View 1 (cartoon, one colour):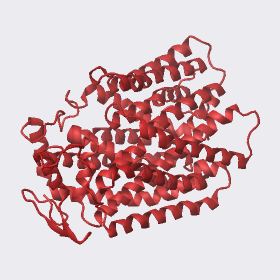
View 2: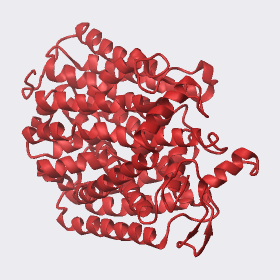
View 3: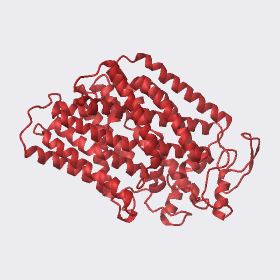
View 4: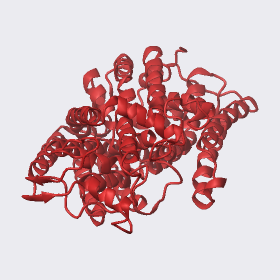
Length: 550
């Protein structure tokens, strides 16, 4: 159970806590009482915060340093290129740190841990597929090399060069729509972690996340990509330390053999909780299954070549060679991105399975943070909370800037009769950032996900991933592709994901659309629209000369 900050199997300890100067009943004792019927109603966090003074100091110091570094970079902003892509002067090491920090948010920890809780060690399969996709593109330069050589700010801007201004505008709409819906759940999931890991009163979730969003908005609005890069570097160091230290403590406290045997017993039905998915075989019908894995292979290749937050780092590098090295050197990181938080989810499942089952008020998403909150001793909990806040800040800032750039560059700018001056461009982009922040606050409060977090993120991303991926591949490598095919691909590619979101929000769970059906159909329909639309109409009048087939 719990012993001075460490779990000890088979024993219950009540110890004096220096945090409060009084005897402290460990949180798992509340779990046991709830299971035994001594507590009734919805399970809630402990009545007091679990963060000690030392933990608060660690978190506060980090926030001050991060905010100060972000604000300091605002002095280097000279124009919109500096604000959005750092003047294309990002070298490989900073590019790696920025990409890793942006793509490892607190929402990442939550959905990967949820995959570990629901699907065991097999939940990390998605990370392996993503790493292989980064390696493939990093070695071949598929899509990213000609895209970087085109000298554009965003992906839709390339479509104006290849197809038409209207295609660029429509693509910008789909990119912004998919991106904003995708990040709409970030604040809610991040808040859930803080509530269940620290014992924060649930009523604090909205105010705390609003303040955190305000801090991110402040340095992002003032410093743009330069502030994001600087804070990403700091956050990369803090997140890496917190994730590794916590993972070591999880393994030492639970025992590797206990985790493996616990998963085996849960699958066999001999443990306190039944695992419905095979914990080691991702191809098993009870787990992801072959259809889901095939969709994810295509999906991850599209992600690494199309996802605008990732591509922003490609476009900010000094040249395409740096972009390719960034991909190769970052690839294995994405295995750990799924494996380590997934391990926490596995440990949470085994722990609760061995201690009477999952308490009331917890689910597959919130079980991990509650488990981590009972596990980490003074100082280590503060380090992890600081790391998770760092992860949240780096992801939210990078995503907000990315979608603001798309809205400014590809939706609003093409509609202007007279181009804005440098000051007008900066003011407009900063205003869009403020609008995105307001959207995140309201959308995150009322929307209820139709399923687990990863499926939601994958399908909302698919709103534009499938269509834009087909436009990129066809536009760069197929001279026959034209604007008619591009329109067809954009519209048809969004049908599956949008249908998934609308239908699954209103129908019973037994009648919901499977995410792999919605995702795979979007790729198939998008490429079909591109091919048929292009072949049935006249050949294009212009092509890109920067494309070199792999």
